[in-house]
Amino acid sequence: MRHRSLLILTTTVTVGALTLSACGSRDDKSGGGEGGDKTTVVIGLDAPLTGDLSALGQGIKNSSELAVKIANKNNEVDGVTFKIQALDDQGQAGTGQQNATKFVGNDEVIGAVGPLNSHVGQSMQKVFGNANMVQVSPANTAPELTQGPDWQKGKKKRLFDTYYRTCATDAVQGPYAAQYLFDKRKFKKAYIIDDKKTYGAGLAGTFTDEFKKLGGKVVGTDHINPDDRDFSAVATKVAKSKADFVYYGGEYPAGAPLSAQISKAGSKALVVGGDALYSEEYTKLGKRNVEGDLATSVGAPLESLDTAKTFMQNYKKAGYKLPYEAYGGYAYDSTRAVILAVKAVVDKNDGKLPDTMDDARKQVTEAMQDVTFDGVTGQVGFDKYGDTTNKQLSVYEVKNGKHEPVQTGTFKES
Image (cartoon, rainbow, N blue to C red):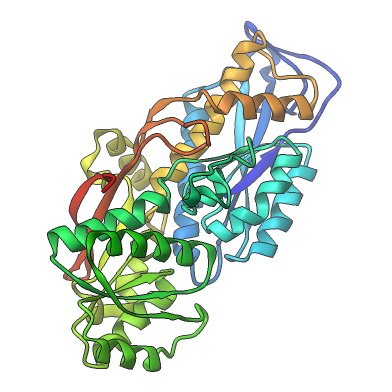
């Protein structure tokens, strides 16, 4: 996700009954209040807007922009106009870190939304942490981002108080998939493949641990380069293994051709993965070869939530050319969380933002811990690690070229 910034002025603006400090840029044409002055607050957005993962990134960007449009229309924070500044990380950690530095260095940006990829989020955390700037990701699922590198050993430690996320983590997503496959589908033999990235390797690891705990057997393991598209050698090994299914820790650009080549190798094994396979692009790339494949995703299907109906209607009315995809609802809620944190700061400060950007960023970060609301994806709130308190997950099956929900629930400790 990306972030915007606020220009620091030296005067005070009176807007209606509110007195807004000059922390922010002043827009004399935006209306509202005596003289039509408003303070402009910028939220940065970071996502892969080009490249293989751009479908997910554009869905995030569009949904974040929609949240800002609705907030401005409803005058969510009296006297404040919100804007989005979107930067493209192309799914690359180094680029994401550079984008974070740009946001922090911009005196207009008060907080950030994003990114999509966990390894990119990891590269951005320290930059935002050093600047006391809040970051809310709609899609990072690696547990270590909130709970530290030793979380699996029971030594959970929050490393950055500035980092939050609205999606559930792989600590529950992987095991939830394992329980579904072992208990509901009665699959006993798994072949595990990952792309060696933070997200993919971590997800495959939590899945494997739970599957073995349940009594499942791992008949083979492999790693692939996510930039490759020829997986024939791995596909042949899968076919020889007689695995019931392949669990792939990775993203759809490699996952779809991997599944197709496994089928062509003569294997009847389904390919199962996490939320990065839950995309229209997966079915477009794989075509008939991915029929029956499964993917888990965070939360319940938006179509099943009353809180999501208005979002879907507004998204359609906005005329976006690309769908909101798997993380659109979470991007909307992440952006709204930043907006409500700003509102809390303004309310606490008698209708004004702090006089300096440093104070504004710090107070918005502190306010985020207590933000709660009924969001697009359900009840939004954060625990002491910055993780979402909403632990729902869903399983989707590719049927007639589309992901159809087959189960929604919460992970239960086995």
